[in-house]
Length: 72
Image (tube, rainbow, N blue to C red; front, side):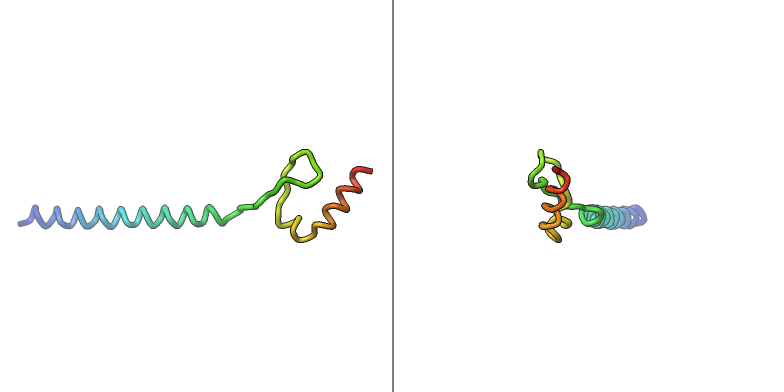
């Protein structure tokens, strides 16, 4: 009787441990994907360098003005 109850408790602990590890993995994967992720794009009018997409979308005319000014 004592050995069977110990095995039952160990099995339950292993299931809980597995569940806890799975949840931790999911949380870390979700956080890693969101934190510090900067979407980039090929910079128009250049040789393929990459720039942050958010800055370009916020002010595309300013980007092209600066690009033309640098070429003078």
